[in-house]
Image (cartoon, rainbow, N blue to C red; front, side):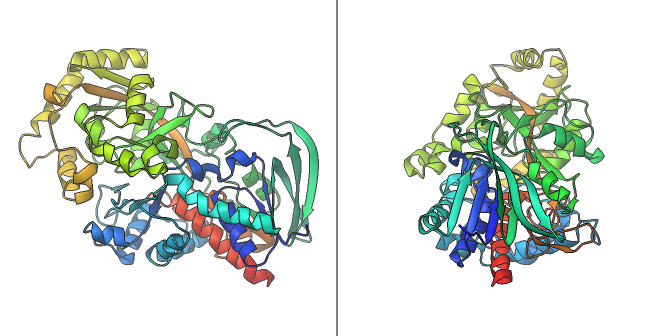
Length: 551
């Protein structure tokens, strides 16, 4: 076929862009190095959280939100400080995204058949002042169907366009170079990889069986970030987050390697904000891994006691779910790459959820019956499986045996039993009154003023050492790699810029490879629910801009 546009990468941003293009009459060649089993990319594995502002779901929960409040939160979280250079377009993309999230985003998604779980989650709560980091109100809207539920409508439309010949999809086609002529990108070249029957997310063969060259009017790079490339993560690791972790686990499949960032840079594209990245602090080793060093993130409520590797309590506001990168910095400055939660049966039953579509079969499978089982006594099935089979859990009937188990798991006696016991006892004494100097206890009670948290997310304050709340549980938390916050600098049309700030003719980018817009619309930190949303928004904006350009 004579393609008008080539889209490199069949993840969410690529699918959205391809659909926008094909729906407007442009012929698209969609290339991806992985097999068809991985169509949808990382988005398929996600929990499916989306950032919305002043939604009907929020209003039904009694949440008063506004675009102005969300923009205040975004600016306080992003901390843009390179405004005349690397953040110039990033901040403009951020403003456009907040407008989108407070405007037509929800209606657009509903028109595509996407629906939301009625209880809105409160991620990244901050814990500083009103203009600091964090969401002032709950904004984390869980898609009914999780990640696969987001991917499905775009995948279906792309498949429909494949049937009509508007899209040609070539999996196992790895782009190795962008073809340029007279300063413009005119095509791509690369390697055809051998047919591979690996399942979704599994490592696939890199054996080359052929080569290709395709020419076009525009190329959209939508290839994702560097989340599985530990070498590149450590190379770009910022000093402000301490030393790079000696040990990490991976929240993304191995093919999330960052290759296209370097290939696009070689063709003249400018990569900015390399030192901005997003890694989780509550990672646990998957007892049933799909990819190498496969980790799962705990989505914690605020009640677990958080200790460093030597048993010291992290200072406020390093509480579960408050400030991901702030806590990452605190952990890395201890000299260890892991930390601990101490909690009880009551806390794990109410507050532990696991990120990922495969860890939430009720939401992913859209099963109301299974979903209702979450309110029954006991941990959810996936959490219980990790407690029984996961290598990072210790369960004990008293604090003495718990600390013995924690030291055994660590492989050395770093934790002093008496020290940990005194710390937990001191925390428990603060539960007696409804008021306290312990800021974590104040935060727990504050969270329960939000009906959604009180209903299904935050356990009632209780003493950890009271046997009726037991058994005691300790969880070793690993650093879990995930997102690239910097990337290819783009203008509001998705056009990739060169080092002089000029758009490169024929070259566009969308999704994580562009820092979710402009080379980093999140700045230094994310408000959560904005990664998938960034892929949706940049894919849509870029696709529409190219249609207008080529019309």
